[in-house]
Image 1 (cartoon, helix red, strand yellow):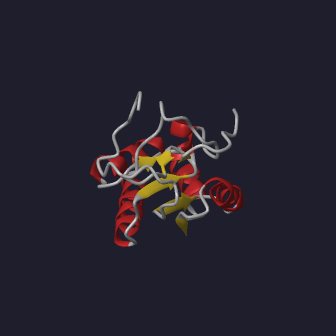
Image 2 (image 1 turned 120 degrees about the vertical axis):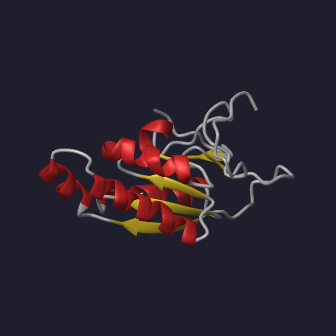
Length: 148
C-alpha cells in the first residue's frame, strides 16, 4: 500500500468542492472499536486533509461483545444503527468505521445513510486513493465513482 501524497482523496472521501478547490472542510465521523485506531487515523487526516473536521466515536466494548456472542447479533446490529444515526445527528458528510470485523453491520448502516459509509478494507484505510476509486462526499448517496 502507498500513501498518495498530494491527492485530493483521503480514505476514499473526495475532499474537493464543486469548483475543484481542495480547501474544503467536511465533517467526517470516525467510529472506532479500539483506541489504537484513533491516533493513526487522526494523523492521516491531519497530514492529507487537515481541513476535515473529524468527530471520533469510540465503542471499545464492541470487540469483546462480538467475541462473547460468537458473531454479529441483532443487538450489535442495533448498536451500529445507533452509531450511524449518531453520525447523522452530528451532521456528518461521511462515516468511516475503522474496524472491519463488523462488515455486515457496517453494510446495514451504509444502506440507510444519506452520506458515504466506508469500512477500512474498502479503501485501504489510512491511504489516499486516486480519482478512480473511493466515494465522493459531495455525492450524498455515496455511490462508487469510477473514471472521474
